[in-house]
Image (cartoon, rainbow, N blue to C red; front, side, top):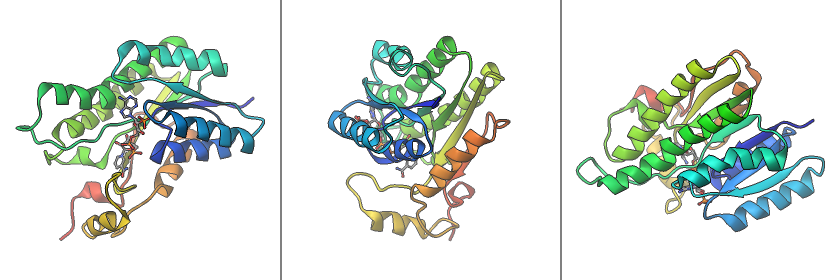
Length: 242
Ligand SMILES: NC(=O)c1ccc[n+]([C@@H]2O[C@H](COP(=O)([O-])OP(=O)(O)OC[C@H]3O[C@@H](n4cnc5c(N)ncnc54)[C@H](OP(=O)(O)O)[C@@H]3O)[C@@H](O)[C@H]2O)c1
């Protein structure tokens, strides 16, 4: 029997790469999307052709909508038969200092980056007897730079949720976090943008997807690991170099 992973925001970018990686390792994948319906459908079709003995299905939901979010875990179990791994990957990443952050903007950053992972964690715990959760936070949680104030605060809180959930839900559930650094450029920037930023981190180069995929494998395989964070950031969490 193949285990089932449900990945939020899996239609493109990091989530899509994680889906392809886990599919290659024998997992069934529930592919969540919001706006990227064609990308998600194409991914499910492509994976289904490549791994015909595994199941791939898509699940659309706006993670700002509580009832849509609350229903997702039950929908995945109904469609896929089981749920073993929840990956909270979906995110909104928008700039704004504290002065620039309106209550509505704050709520959007917190809604997708913290509230939805909280709701999905709760539903997973209520509907399944055991499982694994991996939360995507960010190396930014280690500093107080306020250029992305609401995003950074939400990701700091997601790391706190990771530990609290590991504490409450063990031993049936393990809950861990991954904190990427320079991975993929924002949609409006290119690799050169990341390479310039990398000049100020200890490893002096962007990491790409490789450290994230290796960290996911490590978290899955290490069944005594819970409440932990893996920084996939080339040492950026230690501070910028001169
Ligand atoms: N990229 C990096 O270098 C980097 C660095 C540090 C941390 N991270 C973290 O790593 C994770 C993946 O990064 P990424 O750059 O691949 O993320 P991303 O492209 O910014 O977002 C991933 C997906 O989140 C979904 N999403 C956004 N708003 C949503 C909503 N209201 N409802 C449902 N889904 C929504 C979108 O799905 P649709 O397209 O279907 O709408 C989007 O494709 C994120 O948690 C991010 O914070 C990334």
